[in-house]
Amino acid sequence: MISFENTEIAFKSKSTKDLKRAYWLFKMVSKKGMVKFGKWATIIALKLRLPIDGIIKRTIFKQFCGGISITDSSETSKELAEFNIKTILDYSIEGKTNEEDFDATVNEIIKTIRKAKESSSTPFAVFKISGICDFNMLEKANQGIDKLTEGYTENYTKLIQRVDAICASADEANVPIFIDAEETWIQDAIDLIAEQMSAKYNQKAAIVFNTLQLYRYDRLIFFKNELEKAKRDGYKLGMKLVRGAYMEKERARAKANGYKSPIQASKEATDNDFNAGLRFAIENIDTVSLCAGTHNEESAIILTALLTEFNIKSDDNRVYFAQLLGMSDHISYNLAHKNYNVAKYVPYGPIKEVLPYLIRRAEENTSVAGQTSRELSLIIKEQKRRKLESRR
Image 1: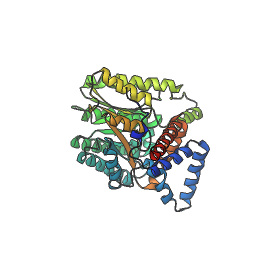
Image 2 (image 1 turned 45 degrees about the vertical axis):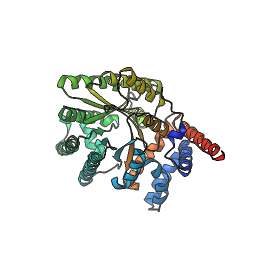
Image 3 (image 1 turned 45 degrees about the horizontal axis):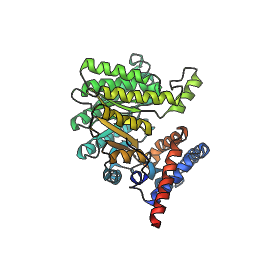
Image 4 (image 1 turned 90 degrees about the horizontal axis):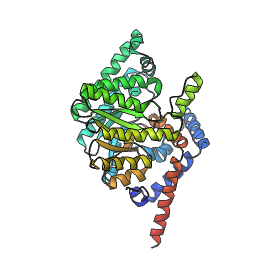
């Protein structure tokens, strides 16, 4: 059985200075009050046009992002590749509202696909549907495409054209593309688009991957229904499983609008569905390609055990583990050391435009029980190990 306790392997790529920076960052995000203040102060500083780019770039941006561009991120990709860890370039800008910006984002995503085609260390590309269309239109489409007004119908047609251009580029390059999961009030529309693109481009292999957030109580049955459709219509199914990134927002909106929260009643229920999803994917490996996006040690161990149980090689390209850059290195590096397929999400983009992503990462760390304390304990353990080693 694999162990995630080896901090020498986990932090081998990190200098002592890197460890110190990571320690203080995780120390800060462990405090909800500090995160809220930091979010407020950053927004105010940006509005006042204060010169904070340098501070952000040297701290939280350096920890969680690869660079401001694809080229700028290449050094991070090379460093990861030295330890058998691959890269998923993630153009992480959010909040765009006009058609020119949406088209520019599509072009950037296609650039990441071309980069992946050129590099064996970049096995996937990824994008968010909400990053290439009007959010309000997507929210309307979630209620039914037939209910869209004339203006929104035109925008929806443009969205489908953009998504198809991205998926066609991925198919041509033979680079699988992840469609990220988002909020429940736009997710049905996203699922429909992902299904349409899967049916079109996954005839021979899983090129288009949908993403399931298992903190939702309805996602496991959704997964099973999607498999039935794929088998019925004769295409492969690509699925990325994650626990989810919008938990507090989902609960707050459900409470404010008086409907049942879509979030599982407990963390245990989320864990159970996530792990059941892993088993379901491996049981149907002839049809399903899986990316397990998890920072949970138990789930990672369960997946390694499933591969052994079903006699699937650790480096079978239908099964990947994925974590975010700057987080859970003890999982990523120890898995890669044992020759499992591991990829790190490497977000990039202009600093100010990536800030919403960085703030969400900080908020997520404070809301996930035990995540930050585990990161801190491992960093402290490695710092102590290095001090002892230096005295010998």
